[in-house]
Length: 89
Image (cartoon, rainbow, N blue to C red):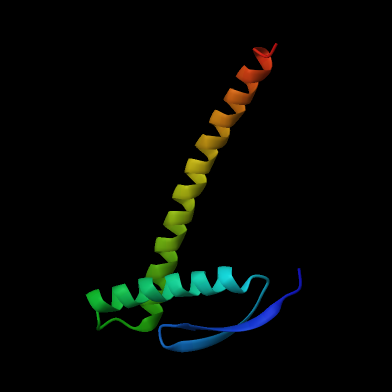
């Protein structure tokens, strides 16, 4: 897939990005912006860099949680496939 250049706005700053999927990147940028805006509302005296770090940590936590859930589901699917193979007619 060919990369395209898009511009996203996060916390009042514009970032040109080379991406493969406009929709995916725009959605990700919007989510980062929303998280940073929420933190800014809770602690308006902090600098933007701290909001970015907090947003990164929150998104990494979410990713790790989803990876753990995916691993559990993959194990269940493997067990189910094995059961079906052993019990097929």
